[in-house]
Image (cartoon, rainbow, N blue to C red; front, top):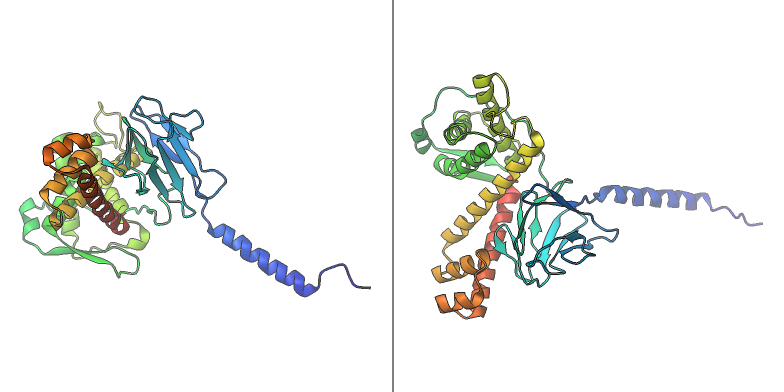
Length: 352
């Protein structure tokens, strides 16, 4: 009589199959939700559905995944979508009030990626993106960096001593040689903005920024940035926090900032959010400058982009002011937007 039990080879094959499937399932990252932080600090939470890459609708409708109120919000205003790598994307759904990412209005055909610290605007409602599970597949790891302060370095010295070589990935195959003047000009505004939002007065923020850059400068002969341990964004944040805490510890014998500030330097969650926002602002400014210096777009196109893509001026008004057709305005805005978003992604892929 034939056995009703499977042959041993079948069991082995089934076991191998189950192990393969189990391993594949473990490799697929669990996608966390997305949080939108309103100006009053409250959070709106969107949770992915059971279907992969399902949209979360943002809008005024009662069945929206994230519900917003206001006359400028359409019933189905925009959608947020995550992929299987944990990355999030935003798309306007033909809303009346429009959707902007990092102060640039979205075309209906666009679906750019969003990350922690990004600014979204739905109609008249501004929010900051927070991704508790990380930015996705190429998310950042933080690194604990300490570069000790040594002798005083004058700002003029940055303009006379060579450059800094940064290796921006773990294999060391992606390198950027940055002149010290460019390094100073690129990161000082970011550090100052962060320090001031963390409670430092303007003069002290200037001192912190100069100290951080000076520490990099003095350590250049022995400085090695290990990209396998974290993105440069986290590296620079750690250096900035070390400089801030050292100053406050020396001055007051404690880590907290000025008494009138509500943000202590030890509050890592709040500081992470502030740093993400300031980093995003810095990256956008750098991207716009880089694309503009490229010189491929006319001044008229840039004016159309600024008026329509950033300020939200009605297209009929722009057409009368610039003598451009509505279609030419839309094309100019789309061309420049694509170039800026591409430059933003390039910077983020290298630095975080």
